[in-house]
Length: 487
Image 1 (tube, helix red, strand yellow):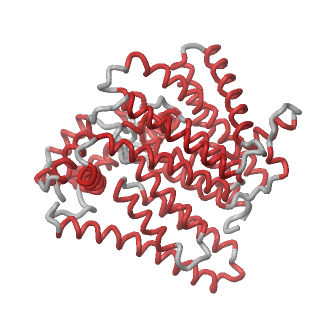
Image 2 (cartoon, helix red, strand yellow):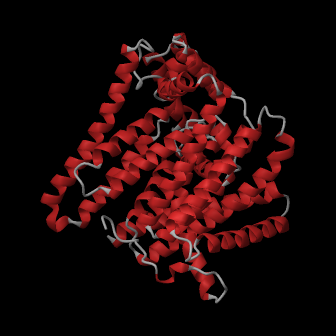
Image 3 (cartoon, one colour):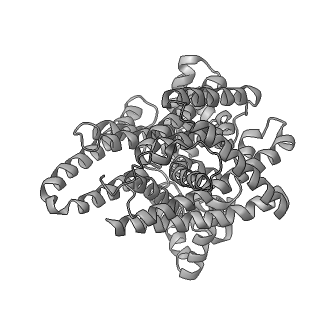
């Protein structure tokens, strides 16, 4: 399976190289000059080495590290949401107001265009309504849950990184996630990315840890479905899972019939559990009088129509919204959107150029978390630039470590579960070549990106150690768990 693993490593290497070059240019623009950027990156690298030395200290057990890191991450996030209570805005305000109405038993909002066009937003809206019903009409409760899901995601990253690579990589992934500015400051924003990321990543961990078990696939399917109800991106995870296990089947081709039957039954069980949960959720909303529409309807082609608009580089535009809304919702609007999609795909050269620009902008462009977190607080002028500069310096390092990880995995030709997270990242990047992009969409796969780069950071740290610099790295003889598909 060296060919498959090296193909994924090559794809990941190209992805991280593009992101690295683009992010360096963006960092230079945000920080102000080339020399200031170089200095910032040098300082960030030094701080990273120092942080890794502390977190990887041999005298610090895994449990102690996790308790200290998660406690620190929780306190930082709690302080942020108390100090910077971001007022709901844009789509977040629409869903929050709808959740307040739903908590009071008023479902008239379900007939508004926002929900008839995008019925998948019902899931997160009803989650917020449940929180409001249980804890009162308090934004703090919703923000606190964001904090808890963020800290929980860091714990999952520790477990996933320890399993895919080694325990040191698990520590690095968790630590970087806890300290990466967007993951902190978006805690005060009522986005569905916190809960969906936690559920989807947990589903993957449950699946990978118990992939030889007959029972683990069912809870994994349920978790993926719950993540889909919060934010509709689980199809990317399902695709990565199916491709990963098809590769596992190929590795076991001498025993293919027996293994294929068992693995196929498990995958089928997971998918059945996934769609059963979605169907039950949709039926429950219908029976409960929340909406008479299916969660699977709405503007099916809107994201593609917007994403293929070369004039906006695949971003939302008022012109596209006006065009789409000029047609009645349903089949007529879908046909009109398909006409526009075919028109935008008619020039292959322009489409390829658009996809290249989208890849660069989504994965190397400036982060928008400070904008979303600070707007309406009166702190925009004081905190926007410092937060963006810190984020850019850290993100450049993450991309550099990602490149190092891909080089190491290419040389080994074996990557085990590491291949799954790389494949997941590539599939998510690939689908966004076709659909709408926004800078904050990058945050959905930041956990997977951090898992992949953690191995690169670990290897770079080892190279620093070989230069006989004092690092205290405990991983010199630590077992490296990167193996082939299905290892």
